[in-house]
Structure formats: structure tokens, C-alpha cells
Length: 257
Image (tube, rainbow, N blue to C red; front, top):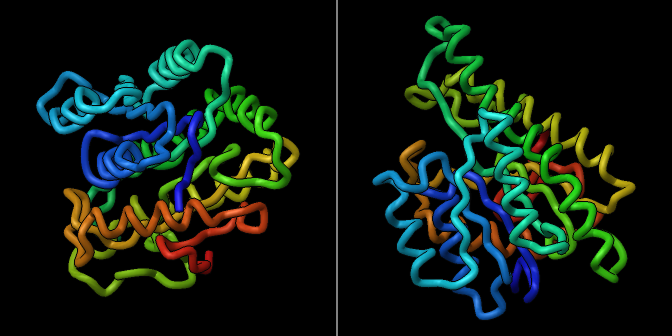
């Protein structure tokens, strides 16, 4: 099952490694892959983006875009570039994947780290949705179909069950407090709810998604990245208007706020 059909477009932030890179890799390898895959990262020319550059060189339609989600000017410049590339078409799927964490505890947490993490994990997705809203609205208007879907127009905020106030996911694990990360993901979840209400009239689907504890640089979890991303893409393909404004995991199961 495909997330996007032919002649569609998707943008993924934080694409130089981890979940973001694997999302680009799996999307581009699909038989009915999107026409455009905009893979963004802070330093497209740096050594950490080599794997992404290799993908872009191998597959047509993968466009690497410089974008720092903590810099509103960078976001607006990226939106202008994507608008130019799409030549009047809309953007179907925005995946706010870029994230960061500072390994502090409740007692060692600092204002500086809280602010830095919020800039990436909360403010970034907010400004991204603002900058790319015209393209998302255009995509929703172009699709001659009822309801909502990720192949029509959608914002997917990559969150974490660590932001669930009910579950307090992995709190008892060593280094599991990460206050800045937990609070930022809880705030991101609220942003998703607000987006789902604010953009409902535009028929833009908005969800928060917990990708699972995967084997990435940010968290050395038990699940391989390719397995997790495969499940994520299957879940995104099944979403509809009834799911907008919800908090789900990689399998589509609802997580309590």
C-alpha cells in the first residue's frame, strides 16, 4: 500500500540520517513513488549528508533542500524553492521529522537546553506548517476526492510516546527522564490538535505519530529503522479524516495524550 500516488509530492525534514533518511529511501524505491521527494537537512554538503546525496544521485525527483528548522528565514527560503520546483502544483505531504534531545534529568535540566530543544521540536513544526500551508491548501484543492488522506494533503508531526502524560514512556529506563524532550513532544502533540482544528476546513489531515523506539543515533532502540519506517508508511497510507487530530504509533494504534 502506498502513501502517495504518482504525480504527488512529499517533504521530509531531518533527512540526512535516521528515520528521515529511511523515509526518503523507502519512498523513492516504491514502484508508484511520489513524483517529487523534497529531502531537507541543515548541511546538504556536509559529510553527514553523504548517504542522502547518494540517493539523490541515483534517483530522479529527489531534491535535497537546505533547511534549518530553527531558522524561520531558512524555512521561508526552502518554501520558496519548493514552490518554484512544483511549478504551480501543491505539496501533498509534509513530514516534520527533524528532532533533537538533550540528555538531562529533572535536577540537571537547564533553561538553555529547554529552549534549544523547543526551537527544533515545537517551534520548527509550527513555522513549517505556516510556510508550507499555501502549498498544502493547493494540494487539497487539486485532489478531486472527498475527505482527508496523506495522498491529498497532510501534516505528519513525528512525536514520541515520551510525550504522553498518561503513559510516561520509558521513564524508568536509564537516562529516561529527558525533561526537555518529553515536554517538547507533549507541546508538539498540542500543536497537532490545534492544526487539526485550524486546518479542518482546508481538508488537511494532521496527526502526531510515535515512530517506535528505533535504532538511530538519537535512540538505540530494539527495532531496526527499515522495519519501523515500513510500518510507518503503511500506517500513513491508511489514515483518513477520522484520524485527524489523533496521536498514533507506527502501527496506527491510538496513544493517550
